[in-house]
Image (cartoon, rainbow, N blue to C red; front, side, top):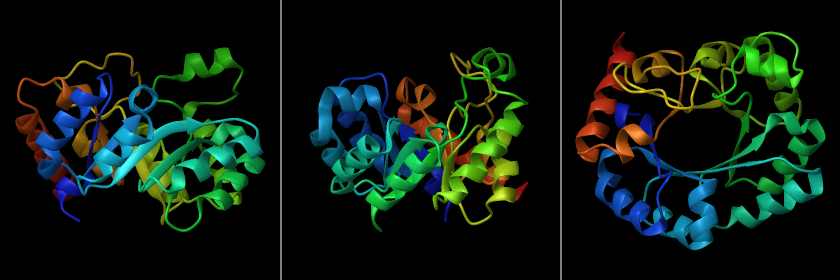
Length: 232
């Protein structure tokens, strides 16, 4: 894989027409795309298929979390859209995760969300979760492994630990920012080089590319920083 292959541009906080225009513009400069709930809710399956047709892998970020039967039906509905990755919440428990895995088949790869990057130690404690974010992630990884899922969405702060716990897994890291970028609502963030050094396979970047005056230049800057993580 090249440094570019690791970069996934998030098509968030825009309408379907804007998202497709951006995706077409930068498709040759990124490794893939992430489509979140906001865009999916506006454009539905049609916008997903349109992005898939650009020839880059697509990660559909729906964070499914419900009773097992409902999640399984949701996974089945996504299976034929042509996306490579779909995520589910690890906090849904082993039975839900196993149902999702069985529904995914062989073409759709599931990623389990461990702990959202907007949740730090104080927020986790307020929810009632015991332990540090790292300890919470480790417990969720064990549950996910028991369910047969070998992909994860996690903060860059826990990515290296997760790589040690699940060496053959696919790891997606959102909340990636260059040092000069604002963190916005993310609390546990890393740079592109840090994410790659930690073992991230999908390095997900949103506003810093989508809202840049020059999205192509911004994407290239991220690729260069990912490459630094490869050689460090």
